Image (tube, rainbow, N blue to C red; front, side):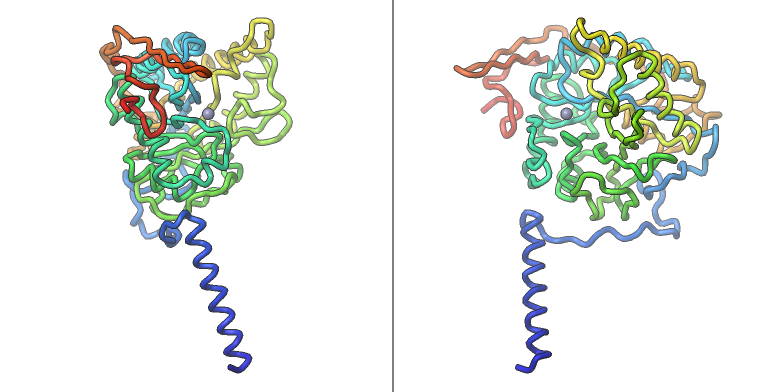
Length: 399
Ligand SMILES: [Zn+2]
């Protein structure tokens, strides 16, 4: 063997090692090609396909683009935060007369399903945020497809069963700690019947903001929390989280991560207003006010919580005074992106039209209790208590 042949031999061996390594990195799944670049020939067309872009869809521009705001809350719905949701959200209207709709990324543990039913019935969106909400991010980053299915897709069956509403109303999710599993997670979600996810912050495209896009083609979005998907998932939407900028100038994907944490009503209001205006005065990409109720509800001996809540409510009042701002759920926002309708015609846009309240199918909630020597859980459900506490791989508690 001469030296050149030797080098070729070594190179092929290394290449083989590299290929074997990348196959094992993705949990033994087949290695797929990255999605192709978005075409400019018009072959990616709404309502099914939309390239990642800061241009408003549908050729709309300027003040004819309604400013969408999605209010979202993560984690368990409980007797502590539900009264706040009811008082802050239930009596607000959009300019077309319909009630506003928020999106709740619920976790199973500690959630009170009769209160989840109440949020659903009042027109809010219930989305998924996992059964276990395990606190190690490596768990989510490296999880295989079947565990994503157990944590998220099976949570869809669980939430709709115990809170007694149509499972088809569950469309989207947010990964705990915004730690997605990249391609593996996207594969599990799209094959499991979800149509969107909202876990990926963007700093590069915060102003003007990135619009939601489908994953038919390669995204332009920056990858802040790896792994990020790069394969094609036709028709599956990414709802980017446009970073806020805190008063110290640093970015924050969730409002409650912004620093310094505002301690007065005025500081809270101006933080929200400044970030709102970054979009309202530019390309009007949807603004997400992504938070946890724990940012607004706290011990009475710490007045900063009441101050922040007052600032948050003042911000919602301000939005309610603007004729072209719509507080809608993430799924309602995506319906708009699929069928862009200008402010001038917005009263004809059916997905945002006023709707009658759904029937109360949780008139006699059951209070279920589970314990062993070290542990106790309560669960309020709209259906009879299952034999065991529902958990991952036993999502309905029947085993
Ligand atoms: Zn969470």
